Image (cartoon, rainbow over all chains, first blue to last red; front, side, top):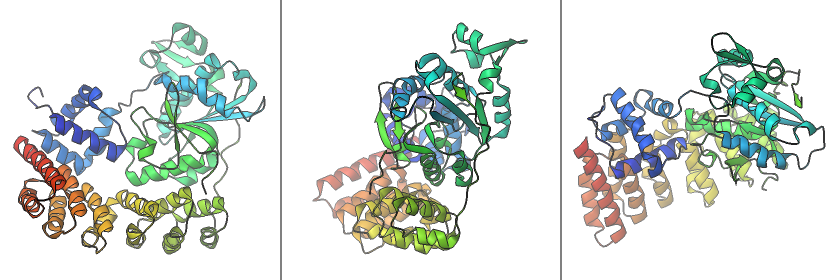
Length: 282
Length: 206
């Protein structure tokens, strides 16, 4: 692998342009090393002797290479408080906007639309309890969904290893988890019972629509797995699942602007998120 | 604890009857047109009504949903109905049509030769973009066939830009001839030089 040539500046730019156009993933010179590592990995895995050969393979999606390449960028490793800048944004900006029109005791609905084994929805619950001073004034409903019913079973069980808890301070682990034998921890029953889990295919309106509308949707590192047509459809489904003025948070390499014009970009101090417009254009 | 869990299961999605969908597409209510546009994606027989409604749709969100549904239907007929919109005077409709075709490349490719020889300059320019997702040899061949006779500078520029990404060595003679034909047009010469350098470098390294 060490003998594989690095992409030239021009090749790197072409790749970034292609990735942005095809997947919405945004990379620039600052992330060059990160991107190159993954290019080398995929060149080695596909036995491509040059970047040009590999790029042709990627561009024509030979043997599902686009999916393989995206997979290399989105390791399915998840953990509590991952991309916590979005959680900061949730409590410092998004919730404040959403409660502006609400009364004390009103429901706030949050959807973890691709929750995998549950770290994200439980992180949202913990973060709100710990970091939102007016959390007691509202009834917060967290719904967590995934297309994979096996990971939903894991999420419902709520048992995690040390690695999933690596970003959590000990006091939070002590507060929200019960220690089990074998370096495992289980989410406390109270927290576990406060999240609803459902199976959902985000490109199927018959499955997304019944979930109703939400104030905030987390849909991180999911849309990049879809082809263009599926992404468009998923974006429209998610648009319907937001209240007007509701927010959607994507993964840090994803851009809704490349997928759909339905949403407005909102730039907050901690994160860029997308918003269903309050008033529809006519 | 302020966290609540609703015991109720999600509501069931009511799919409207086809007649209701067709009526909804031309409703005065924006919300009804949106709902009808979304529902029409599951009705192949609604392709004609969707395309007709698109031509008069003023709401950008509803228009987006209509294009998505035409792509979702995904038949030859539904894709063919998007093609005339590439020559619309409405730039939003043109862009929407191109985005829709781009998101359904396998269905759109069948129409590429006819689009690249369309009498409308704008259609030819937009269609060059559709070649990006073709396999290298096919993309190179299609765009070179266009470049060989294309009289419009802007169409050539669009084809050259795409060739710079997807072209192979076989495109180099065509690019050279194009440079000769337009030797008085500096920006095209520059674009051809850039594309040639890229293709040559990729070939040398490959």
